[in-house]
Length: 274
Image 1 (cartoon, rainbow, N blue to C red):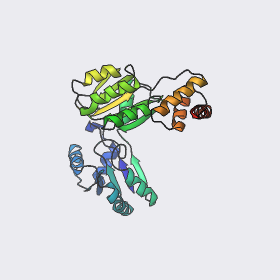
Image 2: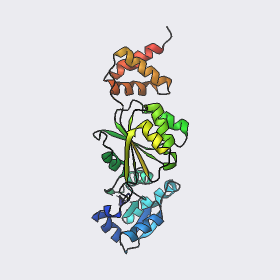
Image 3: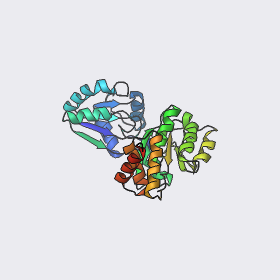
Image 4: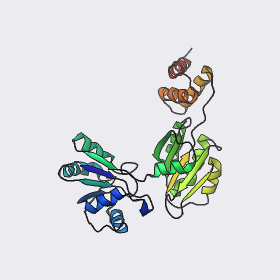
């Protein structure tokens, strides 16, 4: 079978007993970076030296078929450098290929930067959305924030420390300078920090330079109180920003409690020439 195994995101003491037992007996490991996996084995005091096969974003598509066949014959362990494989890390295509081929897939759960940052943030945790890494280019990043402007759930992003200040500045521009934000860095490590404030405050803080692995946690948009005409106007505003009409109606419906169909048909009628 294929075994997805979560590894520590910082502190090696977070390694589960199941992970240590698995790696002590594994014969084959597909690893995002074989050097990182070798270091993990040494750090955990594991004497076993399984065969390590590189599996990363550049070769996953071409290697998935052969790895699935290997998983038919023996237990194949999949590791990313930190956290859960497939979550902003290699492994998704391999899992899809294994499922389609009828190969069993199982998981050894463990640390996840996403839920750890969310829990630490102090922002609502009952509903959230994980948006992965923000785009590198400013235009694409602004568009991403525009698409999430009325998202009511708490949002979690990954970001490079080198682009953090720019990302927070763009966030403040689109989502509002007063939007509550928490920047979490170096989770479970010696210099772990959760910096809380408004988007504008944290953009100013980050301009001085920030180091480490970064998660950005953003409060969802507050529910709008609106009647149907103002709701339709908000739908049309989103459409002018690049939303599809259907998606804009759904976003405003969720934010206001107005009927999605009423918003869609109202906006459609408003766009027709009189």
